[in-house]
Length: 548
Image (cartoon, rainbow, N blue to C red; front, top):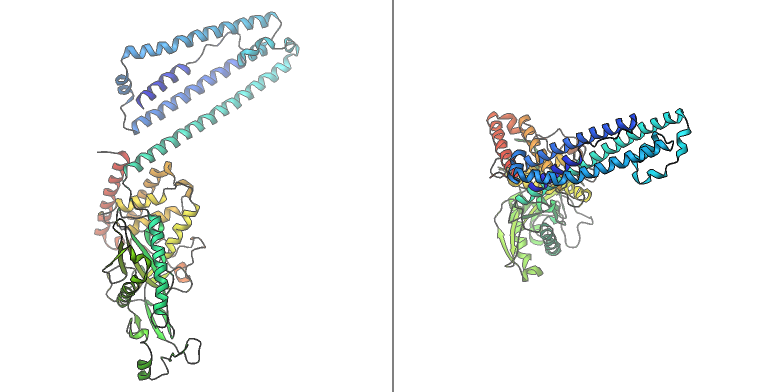
């Protein structure tokens, strides 16, 4: 880099040196040559400033130190002399040739246009038509106007070339800076796409046996699992031990119905629900099927003697679906069905403790996958569920928080389809979710910031040359939100979401949900958040600047 800058500056200083102009040139040509020399000098100065900035940004010494440390003074003069001598000889020969042609043109009755054509094209100097000089002063005037117009076009062309060169220089610099920052970051080594495909295949096999086991029962009917969470969105905040989350929608069994009731007690920013289970009359209906009794109109003794228990008697508490009971039921299902799956021949199942989901790990000695099965009830035909997704410390096992995981997953899938190859929007998110660990900001906060930015900045501007710029955008967005004590939820009340994301009317038209509500209410928490942002920003700058 040092030698390249040195040689570039020396060559620029020699080539851009204004050349002498022969006495035979007319006034228009002289003005054009002076203007061109001035323009070249301006370009030279801009390039020197940009190169100086480049050197400073890469942590290289200053210009004086760079030149003095690269070569000794006598070496600099020797190199300059070697470059100047041939160029001086060439200029002398060119000026002598031009004076000779001017003299011949004057003797042959030529005019200024012949001289001008010689200056623009030396090889065709002897082939100009001498009759041009007899066309009079009017044509001379027209030629001068053409010269000014051509000069204007040449200047515009030079300006365009200068702009193209500057843009190319900036793109190369941004691309190199993005590459260097990417190389300084340690990324998770797991293949998320492979893990998602493996998890999807496993859940499909589970679903086949779930349907067989539950076909004649009065437990919830389990639908096809939906991949959600960071891994299925294409990123992961974890360096190792990635969690593959799936959401299993539940529908009511025969003779039952689900009714979602909004929980207003201690209502927070995100809505909570209860799932009330109600028995339905099946007398004479297609639901009754063979040997099915109506829970409403048959005696309890007959029902207990001849029919499996109702859902109200198994997974409910006070007529409401219980999250903890449902979680234990899922564990029992997974444990009972696992030996029937072909994966059980080569993989080992380890169940992990959880009260609001079913978590387990499967390993084969070389690879391992950690899977979390969430379960929930869909709101109508939308992409919003009430689920068992852990979010806060709940006091009641019958509380089901509103989940936007499916809607967010669909948003990331849509961005992935629109993004060009090599887009780094997911790496930006992954970088910040790992950078903020231990600093107080949640992973969901960083994810929300990136989703907002993705809805503003075109997907074509998330490539490697934009990487550092996007990191700074996210950092600036976090600072602004912390200062304003406001970060709006990306799904709730967002009417600009793509139509492919289906929201219930009450979610679509809801007032904006402030994820920084606690900062708004607590000055101490706000002060701590500002301090945590400063720490995060310093870490970011250290990574970008590569400070030790």
